Image (cartoon, rainbow, N blue to C red; front, side, top):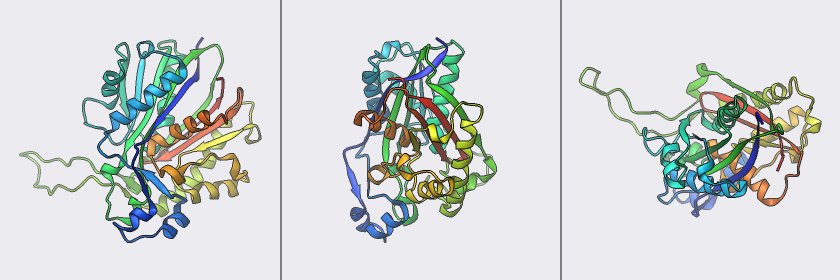
Length: 325
């Protein structure tokens, strides 16, 4: 039983819907401008719920789908860049909220690739035989690090959480994983942290921790790295892109996905997209999309799926999985 497979999925988004028309009232933009450049029509915004709250609600739904109790969990991994606090971790807060008293906990920070990184880490724990049941969550409240006066970024982001339960199985659900990083390109997408400010450091002026992004460079990076990820995650497997039923990309920008589809000669309909409803939810986006597909009944047993992420770090990754539910 030293293989990992997805036993359940879950997601949660706040109730508050912010449309492009709502944004027109707070920043110099328009519905046409946003939609034509991103494909986004609306996004969900927290009205006070923090990251751990969103993560716990997605986790409960994933456990219900897996028909598993929180007590059965051995490990909780949360991918996020918008922690409630530096410590305790979001995963520890989730543990308390859902009652997973037997689980070890830690967070990871890999930007929008975090969900891919988290599933890979969980898979390795299962493959090694150390753990049997692992909860992986991608959760973000990006609205608290968004500069609502910057029209180039505030139109992009939304809040939400997506989760999966990984379990040990005789069936190989996670077939192949590919990950990478390029730290020397970190300046293209960042959220500043707390600056060094102690009695021995030069005087500093504190600045807000807002998302900063070079959209052009991220576009060039993403369109190249997604195609590279396809190639590498399929390498040394028995599958090609023709065998893939769905591709679930990080939901960043329709232009990015459409460009990749054209360059790779892949039918755009093979890509599952829901960014028009939720915007870019960073590490939550792939998990939300996967859960939506599961709930809609789009996934059939033995379907081959590629999930692919890219984001701050810069980081990237892809997972080839077989749907065994």
